[in-house]
Image (tube, rainbow, N blue to C red; front, side):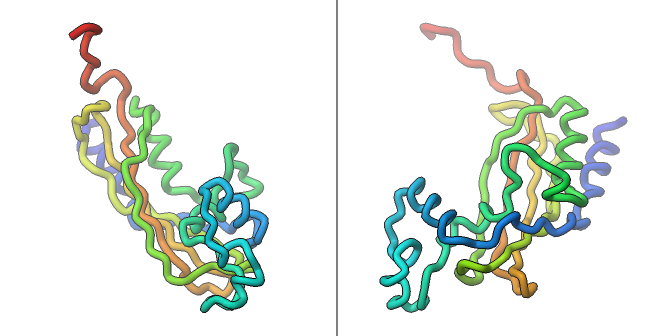
Length: 182
């Protein structure tokens, strides 16, 4: 298959959103505490109900940066938990089959429409929005793949979005390390 035909096949996934992936659990105080402990975030509106009740939020809210965490599949993708079409997975499998087997995250951008509260149940719908032509980078020859996930609550209200870009590259095709002592 020609490079142009391969790129066209990859780009054929653009604009065909996957199925919504509903979080396994509703937003909850235990996970918020774990996140805050891991991030060393002591903001009382996240973990102290008495102080949070006196804040402009009127109660506990989740740190906005947790938005993506609620719908993450974990270390093992299980179809019984997250069934349905996964356009990012489809693109990545095609890239793997073509020898682009290494991956590095390059950047992400987040939009937060509102704070999440305990009891909110989030679903994320992912769409592939861009696949670059072949690029030669210091890590190797590869394609940048950009996705956008839109997050909605149990009422269908949009609560935020994340654009995420990765580089899928062929290992061993980047700049070589300088020899020792050079």
